[in-house]
Length: 66
Image 1 (tube, one colour):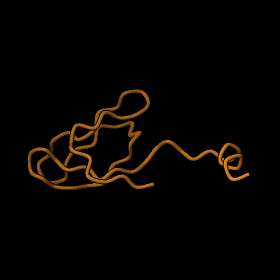
Image 2: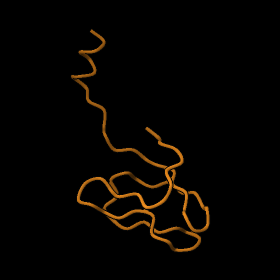
Image 3: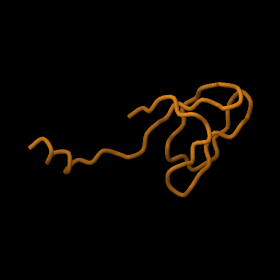
Image 4: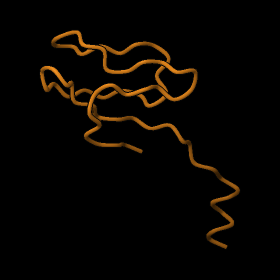
């Protein structure tokens, strides 16, 4: 019954990600399905690019949050 419960209550596929900037090394949290361009707070480098659904992550993903 445990596996059937997972089918009845689906989990979201979107996540929050901790992304490291490739230029300055700053880490910040972004949404995996971001609809806007996210820039680094420190140097202004673009970290995500919207792609209609899931955002393209241009930095290094350090950690995933559920």
